[in-house]
Image (cartoon, rainbow over all chains, first blue to last red; front, side, top):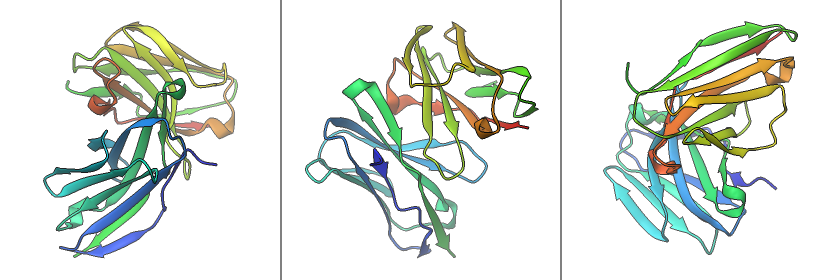
Length: 111
Length: 113
């Protein structure tokens, strides 16, 4: 079983729509959750992190965490073509101080 | 220079070669990391250093040898690599092992022939 799972996509949304990216994790002891954006040929860039159940908003981005369901998501409102990238979910767990990434979801925003 | 820099950006080496990757951070951070990114696989954390002490070694083969001489510099020494070691090697830094302050360098694209 993979520690962090994401649909690889590609996910395509029209410009202005809401993009919804999902991630599940296997370790119930996981405490911290992160979303990275990686443009093609570039390194990952941290865009959001969340520690508590519920929603966390930052501009057009909202991270949602449900620890009971072991599920974390990222919503991108008013999607722009510049949001086209691969989005990586990452989870930190105190069990062995491990930091796991998913394989990423490719998002394309169509003008 | 700003942020996290890595040299070289591209490296081709034979299986019998010895080479080193260099990472330098200009952010005043005190934790540094090496990651491996292979196609179709999750980003893998290889090594973690905090205050120049190694705090994590995730079952990485001994043909990869890290070195952290000070909090601004991190090296990854490579020897007798295999073709499956070809990947993008990313360095990152953060303040005090705080994953929410982690910044990545541009990476070194390694090809092992």
